[in-house]
Length: 400
Image (cartoon, rainbow, N blue to C red):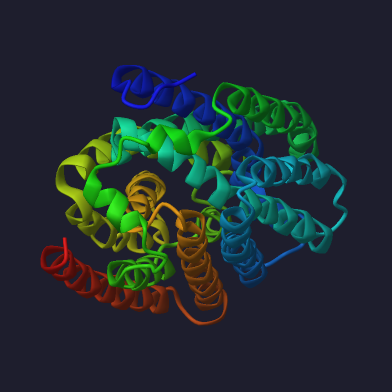
């Protein structure tokens, strides 16, 4: 039993818990990131075009984020964080079910169900995890979790690369995913047995933090941060549309798309540890790299050069690492403990809604108008994101 004030033991337990939750996420990522690496090509294989792929991928992300608003609210209201997380992880079985999809419409249903499961579990999981990160540093804690998370995101796509290489096809890869999908839930139960009440890990709050946590209102900083999120994410190119371009223009072969995605996930994992530490030192100032690195991605991705395509995926992985690490860490620092699940729900709704709109428009621009429209679209949004970031900086200095 952890005793209040036993700082050394609390930190050790918090780190152990972060590692366990990282393993849970790693197994989950083997399952759904493996599948995401071939969503674009698989939907194309089943007869979908670029606009449809952009719409389905964007809708999946939208559902996967917007439903977090409800999930986060119920997580805070009921305090059943573990149960809600378990239900969400259980829905990973939608991934192996993709092996039975006979057309892109059925595949779209399973994709959206998988994203729904992520929506259900994520606010509860992040709220659970945020308590432990308080002990080791917000950025570093989320960075460790994201690095382990991305280990699974590397393994998953490589499984599909192997399946395609040996001739088992997409369905062979999806069928294998029963193993990590079931293992994820089992590992979650192990983590719960170690720390059944993770909120007790955050009992070392300072007087200022406790006072702030007594407020049920989300601060002004949070809403400015939400606007920054919307602008930067709407202008973030979707990997599914990028991979469709790679195949359509014969830049990268279908077999190598999952490997390329695995590369992005490896970059994501390494980035998470680096930017996590940077966030603990610099705070919200470190967010400026998001629009800076997001802007060149479409210019590189929608070219006809294999080298530029690989560079674009490398940058895409860096930006994803920043999204999954310091963007999550910032929420824990600027919101009260009591409604942190709701805060993550609001944040993820804005994130998913923006990605849905951006992905759908980019898919439409690519197929029906011109790639040049994507360039203008992304440039305007990242400029807006930078302007909002400056406002966020000012608000942070004025109201620390």
